[in-house]
Image: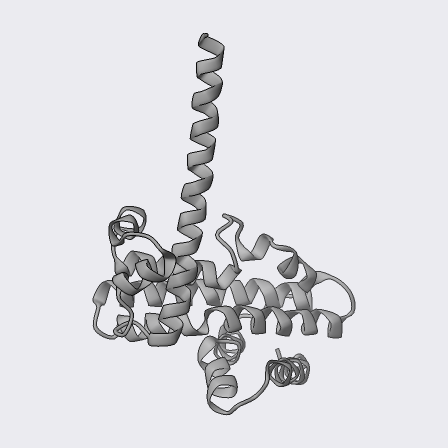
Length: 209
């Protein structure tokens, strides 16, 4: 009887783990949607819970607070899923070092557009929240520092050499979510137009970088 009991417990544990992961994914999807639609102030945990078909207590249990959920939602929006694989280790980042220069630049523009398209709404909610919260402002600053490092690594893959100093600062600004928001959400560029704009910009800058 003992082996049967052990197998049953293992099965139940595995099933619970899958259910917990699915619930977490549904909460994060709802959070990304609502933060994008309504911003930080306009989004409530009750609204997220309703859209995810869970209790508010489930959100508190999994994320601790609305701020914790915002941070987790942004991380997922950037990479596109809840898998614990850094963006730099994913195939779309590895492609930055493959092929001819223009192919690598194009891959960089596509990756940048994909990340911003997924995350711009949550990022804007993050910026909104950070204006009134010192803790979130500190997180925002750290996220921007991390993005600068990621851009340095990505550009090194694309150009096969390091870029730093003011040139890196320029790329950090050009490839950032704020520029994407202005060009796509405010100026009305399509994603294809944005990608072309980034390719042309990077190709024109490569001689001075």
